[in-house]
Image (cartoon, rainbow, N blue to C red):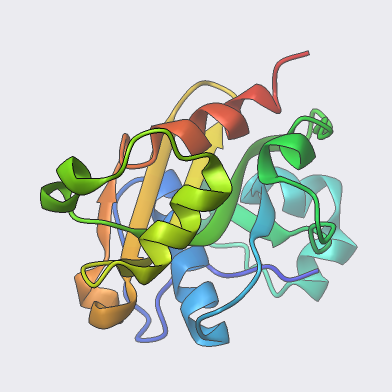
Length: 189
């Protein structure tokens, strides 16, 4: 299990919204692990609630009782995803306890610029398409971090491998809608 603080290594707040801070914090953590990593799943818990209900765990995670933490989310990494299981199948098996305010996932994918979409051959299955994209000269590797809260709030961060810098991370609520929908479905019961 790994938990992170909501402050960048330089000690500055990374964003105004607790959800955006959590997404950028997870992106920063994933960046420290390097590229070519498996998908990672995180529970997002209310930091103040965690300190109150689980003081031992909060101390173990190094969560401080300060004003900034009072309105923050603490990402807690979950166990490694099972190998060989499709992401959508795996997410369909998750049920979060009530104490979890949201969840996040970081995954790496290959993507093509919009200009290349017109050249995609028709009639390919998913495996054939993945091979075609992997060989395309304009492909780009991207790490996507997507988070959702029970209340429907969403946030995403995208980092291109060729622009692997914290200052080059793109954020927005609707950057990866398919993954956001799949994560939101883990809270539907």
